[in-house]
Length: 54
Image (cartoon, rainbow, N blue to C red; front, side, top):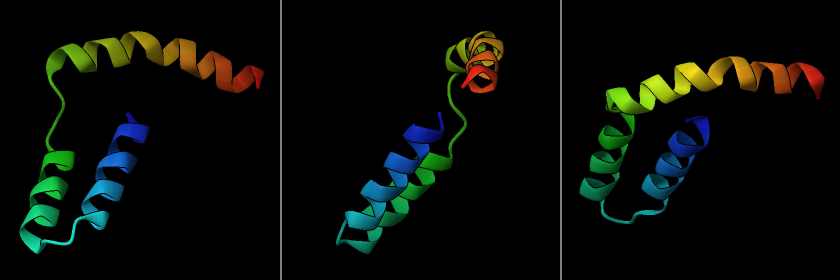
């Protein structure tokens, strides 16, 4: 999820039109769909385990 937000902001910063920049930034801040949240909650413990192991 963090990667997605970083890519969205990088894309927004690369845009030359201020309106496009603002729209991309707003889209990046919108809450994700519930299906994505459910997957994130399910993957959370697995990702935490990977970080501890690494």
